[in-house]
Length: 221
Image (cartoon, rainbow, N blue to C red; front, side, top):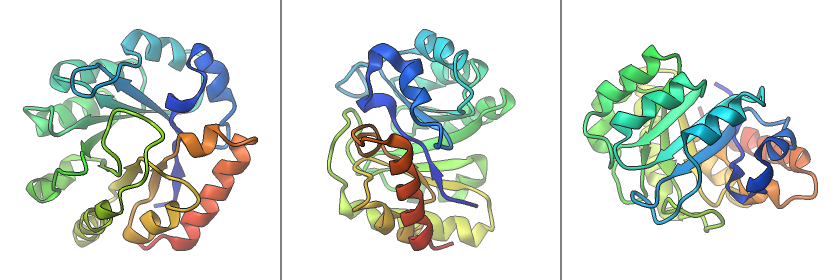
């Protein structure tokens, strides 16, 4: 299990999504934040935009659904070609059933937890998922500061996965930068969403490489 960097386009020029994805060729995935102005207080883009974007880029898509009723809408993103689809446990009424539907459609299935949501209710269900996203900010907006209080949850999640001997990724999203990525990697995260840090850099690909090196040096398996 290696270190993976998935830059979020939320802080990019959204009027030129395909061009902005072209600036992060060194990334492992592109992180697409789908927000509906209901589950979170922000509105970004939906399935039609994601479908068009995926037709124009070869970079695998890591879709993060911050929407109500993902049980209904999430499978369509897998069918559109997203390699990984993440939905919030706070919004899903049947997370295991949804994860199985996503896998049937060829996508990695992932759950996301807000900072105030514990991992404990889902520990017995971990084999049903390919990734756990521990939000390190409140979902809805880019550019927020990393919440240090989420680190114990990252550690508990990684410890549970290690005990299972499973190949399940732990992703963090929010406030990831050169200052915070090492701490998150040391806690057990191996996939990192970095928006502002990457897209505000003069050279996004060089920033991706720098973030990867810092995480690799700190990561604990």
